[in-house]
Image (tube, rainbow, N blue to C red; front, side, top):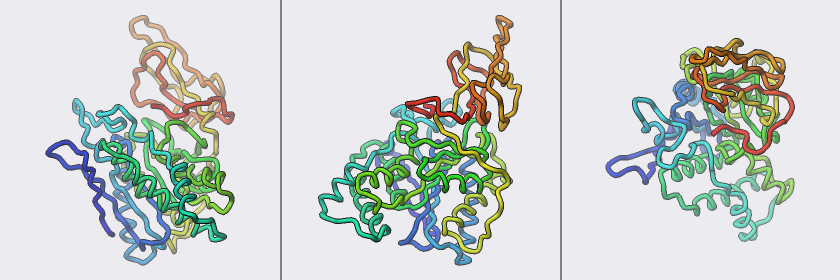
Length: 372
């Protein structure tokens, strides 16, 4: 294992912030990157990273790693320092109010201009084409200003991931079943990933809004191919893995999740001698635009009637919304037929708040598809 430290120079006066990356296996060839807890208050990914670190060290010692695997065990040092009124606040940067998993830079046009200005031409060798385009992408990223700590963190995370063939961004929801977000161009890879980690749901969208980390990488290559032609490979599969809910911090779950992620890396050629196993359950791919929120008509306490992971019919009674002062009870019903897969951990809701999600089969929404 090789440890690299990446200082963020915009730390407050008198303090130091450093992003740590752990590198396993032979460098210089194919790369996979797994990063944990970009939303720093989502703890389960860091426990999975703890188990991944041990297993990757074992695999490296056994000579079974066939490419470089980069692990970022806690990829958001800014968020980990945001303790507000006794609670970790790791989803938004308190200095700017921005979500740590949004607004990653769009490098395509700048990299394309650099490639064309260099006088290079695409070859029949798609791997060589990917290397040449990655050099332009890295040059374009390096030329972008990054004054604030948040901008520096985004740039450093992208710099590590731009050369990767596989990028897995590990998150968790408030309360949820395991699920995966990916882009339609990589549906086959994403289904393999979902089945390896025992996720019953894959949500697909080409553009979910506000440039999250995974799309900032996965959509580079389809867009370059659209401009330059089929000699451009789809060189990076990037996905977000939602490791259930934020309270699911158990070693047994984390060990199983780590093994599932390693099984996927083995399928992608990064690990030798790991036989494939049959998935424990099938995964359904559904459009992210078919993921419909449960929006509360008034404030009140929530008493859920059905468990997560249930396939529900449109109009099925999911929860009671109770006004304790008025003594009234409103039935909260499924907006569409589909999988009831996520809900808020807090049992008090404000008027207009989204407190849960049902994944339907029809794309019914447009615009920004992710929550804030």
